Amino acid sequence: MNTILIILGVILIAAAVVIVLQKKGIIGDRDGDYIPDAVEDSAKKVKDTAKEVKRRARRVKEEIGDVAAELKEAAVQVKDIKDAAQGKPRRGRKPKAKK
View 1 (cartoon, rainbow, N blue to C red):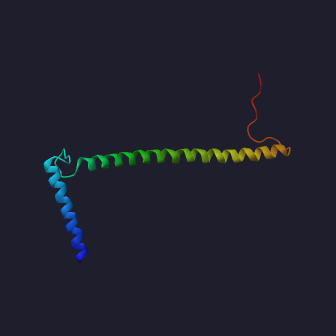
View 2 (cartoon, helix red, strand yellow):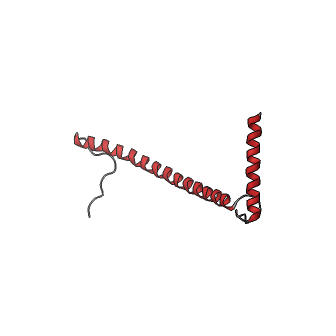
View 3 (tube, rainbow, N blue to C red):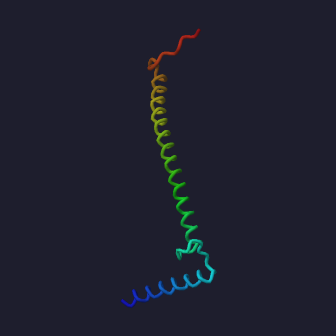
C-alpha cells in the first residue's frame, strides 16, 4: 500500500512541476491543454512514421506475392527444360509462322 502511495505522490509532484513550468513559459504549451508541445510533436511524428511503415509493409507484401507467382511459373519452365533435354516434344503453343 505504501508503494502505491509513493508512486502516486511522485506522479502528482511531477505533474505540478510541469504545470508550474508551463505557467512560467519555460515549457511551451501552444494550445493550453497542459500537454507540453514537445510531447505532442513527438506523438505526431510517431503516428506519421507508423503510417509510412504500414504503407511500405503493404507494398512489400504485394511484391512478395508477385515474386511468388513468378517463381511458380519459373518452376514450370524448368520442368519444360528437363523435358526438352530428354528429347520430349515441345508442349504448349506452337511458334508463329515466319512471314
